[in-house]
View 1 (cartoon, rainbow, N blue to C red):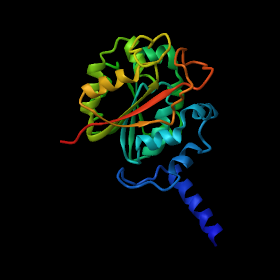
View 2 (cartoon, helix red, strand yellow):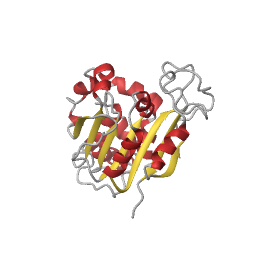
View 3 (cartoon, rainbow, N blue to C red):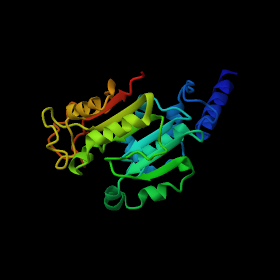
Length: 254
């Protein structure tokens, strides 16, 4: 009987994941193992599973605190790896805005996001083409969550106004909303000096930028840290896993 009940629970959980927990509200607790089953859904691509090995998406999604029904903005969405994960979580009652600027789309993404948008899992995703200085579309207000994964450093060498960018994120989030910034770590004191050569950024720069916009830092996810990374080489094809920070900020409630 216990084995049968356990099997039924697994089948039910898998069904909830496939359906995006339709009808659930953001404040409701998720079933145990929800992120695990979502990440291991069979219809995810092999290419994304390769990225999983270095991104630890189950831990990332849990750290985000993303829930069904949420309104989310994914900054620097690129080809949509993180966007699709978010879309699967928020489900049909939620929405994910996937922001890129035209330069990134033309020089790096090259149609890969358009191809991903054909997947059923992306039905609740709204592609957004806007510069990082002003990344939030007018309809994206009272957001629950904004994620910015591994592209914050790019805004520096692209010459974006980071003060304006972070203030726009602050304005778009509801009180209590969460802003996540993850990026490749530079050595302390490196500042913004290696953002283009090594594609790394000093963590303290990000914290200073975001706090200046009015956010309160609340947590740091250590699951992508690697103290053995000397942080003196470009992040592409590393000899050891890159040391990466994942920071959580909150828009204070009045």
